[in-house]
Length: 385
Image 1 (tube, rainbow, N blue to C red):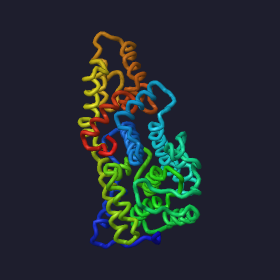
Image 2: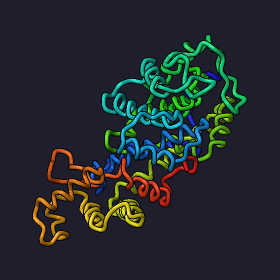
Image 3: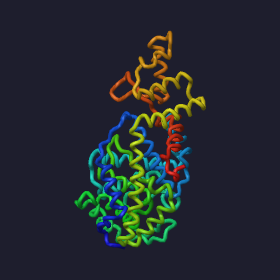
Image 4: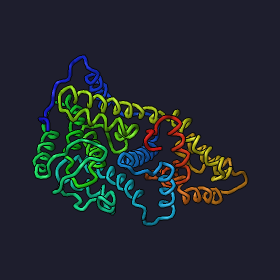
């Protein structure tokens, strides 16, 4: 196993350009015309895509369409998820939320106990390996040899795992200059992979570990920048494994190639955020097509369609904004229309206000149209379709 250390990439290399560009994006002040509550819903959708993509890398064949249907059903008609393929993806969503809270909001550290809890969330309720995607020892380092599926990579001897993981955690928390943060992240991802510290769920956990490092470095805020690092890997699963194999050599040249691959994908994903922060683009290319999708399939009435279009146009609406749609009707009758849309979870009250409302598209049939529009606009990695 190669020596775990940083190196200086050649000044003229593509990697140096990528690091400079990403550091600019890290410091770039988030702004735009999209309402934070609408942007937050998009962030949750991207977390869904990330969880699905991460599971699919490991062989879960659930499609985005299949998962969205179960998501709508479970939100509108709560039930216990029995399908382990679905539960595996839901675990990924919970784990991402845990990272956002623990590292993003509480500014916690990436420690042994943090990784233990992360792994427990990833494998919760799943049948242990080899019959399922769960673990016999959730949160604990393995005490058995393991192999990486479809790979010739030789993982660490289990007796060495604790010391190797201690070295890795020391490596990522060492106070090196900020300019090395992204290089450290890509090297740490590969190192975690070849250590393979748990008996199962290592692939899903290492991608969450990478996400946690990026959040720690300031690439994410509570309702800010969307990061979908799994998209780097799940668009081309074979290329991901091929590049991991390249990095196995442990030379500076090999790690340079691996890090360039990782950071190039990360830059593409982060730059997509600007399109979503521009509400003109978001409403025209994502939200209005989603409403049309619902109307074409007669999932909403004509009057509901008109209300939702106004909600998209204004972002925040109140009763006075739609009263012209109901000539001759009093305020109580209009309130009942709004109440139905709230009950159907298509509108929801704006935070801290009971009389103002915003569009809600996370857990209802509008979500199908939103996902379709995101796909059309190139936001869905090929690996999750």
